[in-house]
Image 1 (cartoon, rainbow, N blue to C red):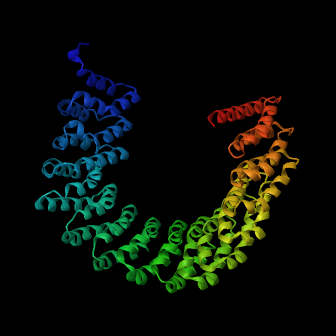
Image 2: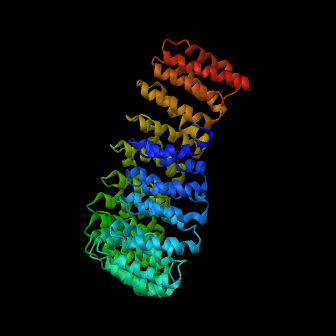
Image 3: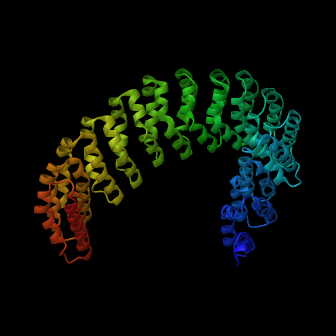
Length: 587
């Protein structure tokens, strides 16, 4: 190839690869579009590359998706925003393909390009594109059009704005449910760009039509529109137009719509304000909490605390609490789990007296639930209740349940409880911990499941950090060291692991006097697994103890282990010796 032909080479490669039977080659070629565009230069990219892409859009969805994504960031390669309009034709074609994800990416790229275009170019090129798509024969074009109005509308002159509003209104009444769904989804974005006068008249009329659609998939998207439009309207308009819709939706015949209302209710309350919430939305919310569909109850139960915060304590006790009691014994474990994850947050709303009288019995019933997730959701939020009712009451009522969970037959439940022990320790205080939970922590070191034993060793370290080395020396270290003579090697290994974790917290003095002798003695164990773990621990202790102790105690022990008959023991011992030598050279 001569030097003169060189600029043609990238486009030749692209064309060859785009027509290759191998999809991977075609994909690679599309992903290298920016490189090829740079090689061609801005003018040839506009005149050759983009038209070529417009023609070659009958490909696998994966290739088209990559093309839609690449074109969205292509403005710099075609000569900047002045020439951005050349990118519109290939993306317009991609907006009409059958595959949803390709269309969505093409719309996203068009929005990105349109938001950078000059107003004159938007009116000249972008608005006609939106109108063409909206009038498209095939529904895919009309679906895509709905996502572009909010970009086209602000820069259009008044006559064109009126036309765009009229076109959008027609899309909301389209024969195809998919088009109406897209229109409902994008209504909030379009409304946000509109003048207040048209918002109250035309948009509210469109919105009302969507809320009465015969397809539940359209109505449930209109629920999202409630919150979006509510933020744009004045409070009195919001109460007049949005509130009745929410109340009707909460009684909709389709459970999917009711589920959507339950999910969005807090945002809807924010839109209509506190007073209408108390009078109109509380009954609607109570209905959702007692819905006959479990999915709706799950969504509603998850919002109990947020909703209670909007109300005062009296209203929450009067209306919400009876429903919460019913949900705590709901037939669906998922409803109970959703409730357990948020119910603790109600304690600060209700205050001490109501929490003790009304909420504590519910906590206890959920703590004894047969479903592990329900119990764990309660345990993980105990601090919120502790702040309200105090430690004495909490410990009397909840401790038996915690002990029960600590001995649960499901190891994952035991594991979760271990992870919360330091949190409980810090909340309940050292005295309470020693009396009630100390023995449990030691018991877990001898659990049958490795994950529990490992978590128990980590737990001891976190407790030592929480309560300090002196407390650990008195309450943890002696009991851990006693277990080193356990006949089962796995439990002896747990002790070695616990020592390696405790040593950095306990400091040099206690490590040298109490922990190191036990580790050195374990190097004579008959089980190789213990011995190579000893080598690892000795390596970790190098930085904790004095240099003299390293030379007099740790090095001789490692040298002995490096001559062990077992290959793994020798390997880890030699690793530790190398680390020790490297450390000495550095110091």
